[in-house]
Image 1 (cartoon, one colour):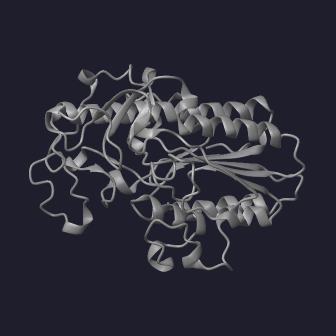
Image 2: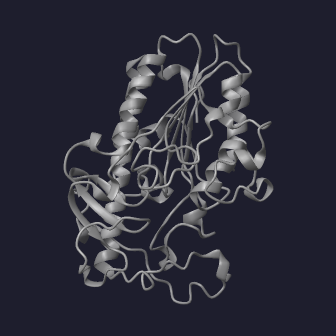
Image 3: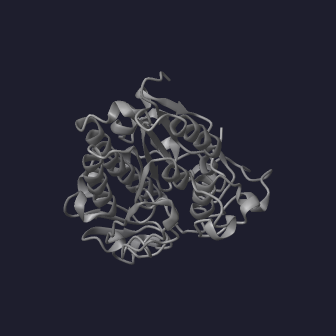
Length: 353
């Protein structure tokens, strides 16, 4: 099933009701999250209790796929409901210019049907760290929102123990390098040092404020982890010692029947990562996922504490999947399951899975 179809179904069910009966909608989207890192999708090591609990309360989709395997076009496709090849939104854009001013985004449709529409952090594309670092809007679509907030964070410059694991044989370069690469930081301080910590706190604040609002809300919450750099408070690294990390098997001749353009070719060899560095990448990825899970839990707890949980549709997903060494590939931009498949959980009050 595609996220585009599910968005349409949620819109129809929510917007067709009278204003008094319309449920709120909480849309949570993670960044670069593979389904296989979540406990509810079978991971036995990575700790994601809050997302796992949500999965037991709603419907967990096992065959949900993105429409593009990197951030910009996937998010534009999801938010506007057009395939990238149809809209021509194939780069780091919101999709607004490509689809035209007369077309509504998903959030904008809620806004036009009596909802208060709000965004926190990365929903349409934002560069990491180029936009997240200084707290810029990125490729946002202002017409989609009644209010919008950004969550700046120090990213690879976060104080703590940093490493560069990609193209750094023997770890000779010390510290976490910037840019779109495998850098990690076991960070000092608490969650509020980080973009996602600020995002969760703002979401809690808005959910409490919206309790007394005279209209339903559509709240889109975008977490940037586990996008690189793989940064999280130090305590989230501790459950994942390097010697517990098991890498995927390397299958001989795995690529023989794969077209050249179908895989990203970001391999352990081309990125000069030895086995220990590869395991450290997975360790830091899991730490980032666990951190994002706890932030998700804070948002869901606020719904419960304000008495709005039973009148709020909750959707959790990611913009695309991710490789963690499967097929000896890393990151995204391939058409393998690991890159194209996304986690998707939809929880509708009163509806059983």
